[in-house]
Length: 178
Image (cartoon, rainbow, N blue to C red):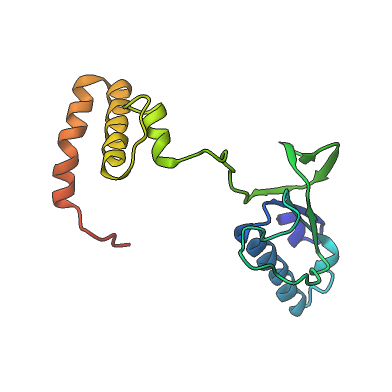
């Protein structure tokens, strides 16, 4: 960013054309517009912002399709591309490199179609082989966490942690005061 402030060029690549990635691209473009209003007229030329999305369109998760709009001149949108690797120079797509000094991962992680957040606790957690929902899922997660503490700290320290938690809950405020 110092290079950009001193008049150099900067390449930014954002992976993820969902709400987070699109909002970040729009805000960065807006910042460039604001800088242009303060005498930095060449900022659009010096910034190259690339938005990478694997789906055929950005904001694909939205229920209603958005009409295509022109993108700001500094934003290049690439849809239907998959990032296969990242390194210090940028992102590797299928057979192509996108150079970026600043890389942002704003894409989610797509789970398989049979994924169930509560069910995974049963498959991999404390209760093997079951399908878990509701309060039982909460209990399973708590027991899984306690088992992790036990293996990490040993029986003595884990017991002290378990004893300290309800005591801390009594003295800590219900709301966070910053």
